Length: 92
Image (tube, rainbow, N blue to C red; front, side, top):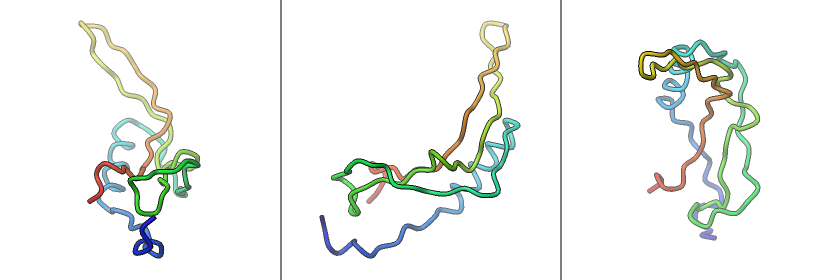
């Protein structure tokens, strides 16, 4: 582990939050007023802090549905949650 990154705090990207909220509103989902991040419980060797953070238990958006048109038939697909997550492959 690189000791230069031990005390680095995560920064929440406001635009990502705004996109999740807009998406949730567009599919008729519940926008949770309280959400949180937690650690995934396995090691990530490609992240400086060695773990990934996720919103799996406390997502920003819950529920909703997306309606698809498949060959002239309408199909509704339920959405369980929309969560923010740190993606290792997109970090510098």
